[in-house]
Image 1 (cartoon, helix red, strand yellow):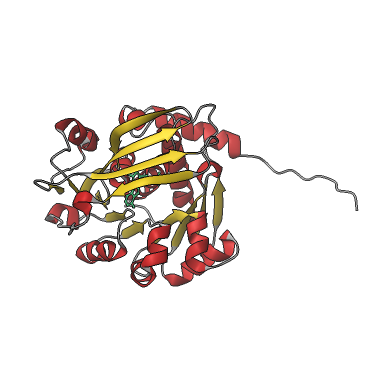
Image 2 (cartoon, rainbow, N blue to C red):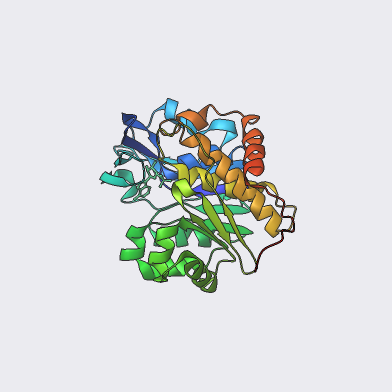
Length: 311
Ligand code: AMP
């Protein structure tokens, strides 16, 4: 079984109250692949420029991730994003977005990437997402992300892609923006009517919620004493969630399986925020992950027992 991701591979400049990095490896596809590769063989599709070095490519290729569809554009520069976080890390301001090689990107998938049975369309222009979706006809589970920019500027295209995927993974505020619904539960139900069978609402430091026709499941973010940089947490969560689904392709996609996928996504995302960019997840080892999932289960589990209540 294998998993293809298409999306940004980037250099990021990030400033948080705990420090800054002028230029570090980033991008949605990068964060996703690092997390998902704990579960399955990943194929990454995306463009980079001449400035993308062997060292960065080696990080992208962690755990055998296939980078042969990473297109090196001669004379081009890699996608660049700069952002700054508020004092409590709640608000992120984008300072700069330079599309560079992304401006003329036309995803070309090798047979290996096209034949993957799970596909993740990271946040890119929705027409590009649709093009890739159409190339991967055999995928049994397709998930996607997006952002407010595309909701506001390319809504029709975006709705077309949403209608062609099994799972939408989006920030809670973006789900409300997309549907115009006044709260997350109503908004997620509206998205379910647009096509996907599964909706995952990312809620930043408050965790994530899963919606299907029959089930709701809410999981908090893993509580940490120190959060250094939230950049890429959403994509790392998606890598854990979709990677877990990919690794269980021999089993039916039950509510139980989806709930476990939420737990693994949450655990992976919690490592990501402990250091800048990919720094922590790049040296994460497989044995650290189940430990955190067990802790998460302990801190969210309770047994109900009858209690006499006064009228
Ligand atoms: P997240 O914190 O999960 O929302 O993801 C942050 C990552 O997304 C960074 O590493 C950026 O390089 C990348 N990114 C930021 N803006 C865009 C954009 N407009 N399109 C694609 N990727 C982006």
